[in-house]
Length: 70
Image (spheres, rainbow, N blue to C red):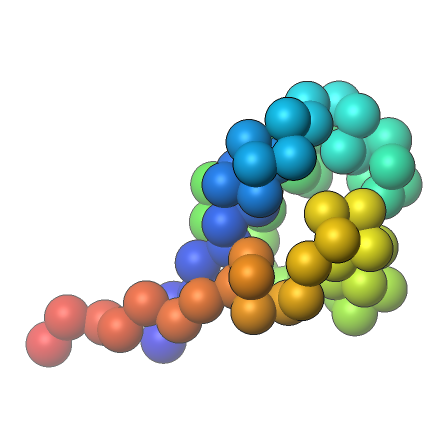
């Protein structure tokens, strides 16, 4: 059950750069890219909390389940 992370959508809505976002939540731009590209295997709750705080959103605004094709 793949989970998609729509950080890029929220960053565009907030007109925020990846660098500014990374600085605000305390991770590297490379790790933001890992999240954006769907390569992350896990996200810490503290990181998720920081993401939601900075983007002023709820976890469901950036996380969604993408059904696998059978």
